[in-house]
Length: 313
Image (cartoon, rainbow, N blue to C red; front, side, top):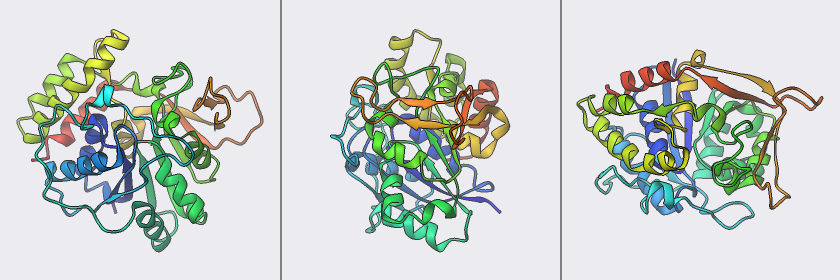
């Protein structure tokens, strides 16, 4: 039986690859729906991008919902400087024909988890955690019913990418992140510590172009746009591919390694707002509330990506 997942996302270029990887793996993953959240760009454009991605994959059967338009307690911070004005620049995807569902994404999330058998739905969070935290506040019982929350966010050894102390997804809505980490559900974290090892080198970009399908061409275009920022920033051989690590964890967890430890989020300090404080060395006796991934096999990761994405139109 494929694992039932809900993807919560602010679809920029790497989110698109993560979603496409899931949609290309129906034997393992049953995508119940995609919920857009404000983050990389505003909610309306992120929701539109989610629609464009399911159409690219030929999976218009997947319902797409709009969630929260901004953080729980903060003014929205976006990242057009990385993802472009549309949030998905470089893809040249047409405007979607498919439309959003009428229901609010948070209500879809709650109703889906509450109506499914216990421990059968996994939440895959690719953006700020506003929707998931709002659902947990509105219906706390969902925490005990979830199989797992797998999220891309945070950093400990790599520290930050939007400020010296914080990773973007956590920084945008630190109160939401703190709510999620404290909820009691099993949590797996894909932080910058592992995503910064998954680099889109020229050879890996060529492999996407050489897939020979519409999806491969779109991915190569998207990543060619978004990688400019990181290549200039870090000076590496390629740019990190963050969000697909979430999907890859569900498909091939042996690619990754980490440990259970306590993870908490800084919400009070302006200097370190959104900092992910991971007790990776188990210095304290605080409860180990998350699987914190630190390393991964980049070659195996990109083999998985190219093999699966070749299945799409």
